[in-house]
Structure formats: structure tokens, C-alpha cells
Image 1 (cartoon, helix red, strand yellow):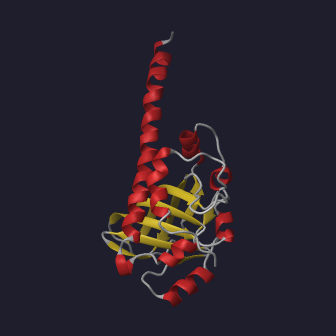
Image 2 (cartoon, one colour):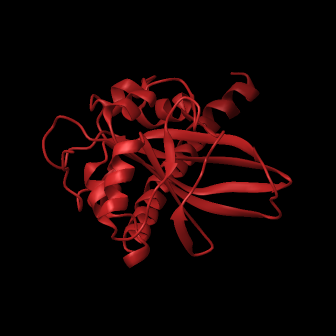
Image 3 (spheres, rainbow, N blue to C red):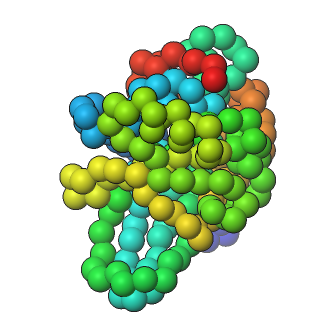
Length: 226
């Protein structure tokens, strides 16, 4: 057998294991991020909004860098409620967030981002190959704290609510101009075959064991209809 081919066959399982470790890491970090943000007391995401959300996306460690022209890049997981009854969530889909912004930005850092998808219209946006925040979808910085009025206004006027945490500071965030799209290659690696984001988010794919901690966090907030 050709030596190069033999080396490739030997190395392939190692690359597969490394990819799976990376995917499992995103799921574990997403669960930790969601737990920490929802336990932030009076500065947390209002529980009422999480209970009403149709889908939740968590992007840990979104990379930010730039001087005058800023850039964003990150990967995370997205899961949606399914028709399987209370506490039923879809398998996670890997999502990429990319994009830039124009403004005075100095330095670099990492930001955790949480997106709440508040209705079916917003959920349907996620089935597209890509959509632009603020262009193709109605996205607003989510309110924090315990204001009932803020919760009601936000849940009725936006398809998606965005939150972030950077260097310990937490609040709503503007992601205007960023794009959000599924990472089909990563999903295929996780589930062992090509799989569409529609299959995943409609509950037709078996969740991986690594998602259990994320589900435990999400199930603290049973679904409420509007």
C-alpha cells in the first residue's frame, strides 16, 4: 500500500476524534454560558422571555477585533422547541456568526452571545442558508432585569432578541450587519451524515450526549405561549 495513503488512513480517526472533541466543547461551553447569564440576578435575561422563546442560540467566545473597522466571528449551537411535549428541544445545530461593523473600535476581545428567537417567523429565518441581522430579520438588543413592560414590548416587536457578556459586563447587544448561517460541514461531522438545518431544528435528528447539560439549563424554563 502507498505509504502516503496508509498514513492518511491512520490519521483519519485522530482528526475525527479532534473534531468531535471541538463540537462537544462548544456544547459544554454553551451550557455554562447560558447558566451564568441566566443566573446574573437583576441583570439577567428576563425569565419570561426565555419561556416564550421558540429557539435559543448560544455563541461562546465570539471573537472581536479591529481599529475603526471591527470584525466578528464565532461558532455556537442553536436548538428549537419541538412538538415532542414539554421540555422537548431539537438536536443542536452548529451556527456561524460573521460580519463587520463600522465605528470606533479599539482593541480585541471575546464576547459570549445569546440569541432568543421569539416567534415562528424568526424560527423560519434560521432555515435559510444565511440571513443578515437587522436586514433579513428583525433583531433588537434584548432587555435585562425584571421590567414587565420591557419584556412585553420586546417580545412583541422583534423576531430575535440579542444579549452579550464581555469582561463580566452583561446586557443587550446590537449585531447589525452580522450574518448568521448553519455550518453544514460541522453538522455532518456530528451526526455522521449530511443533514439539513430543517431536519435538526424540527426534531428529526437524535441529539448527541454532549448536549445534555444544555438541555438541563433550557428545561429550567418551561414553554409559555404568548
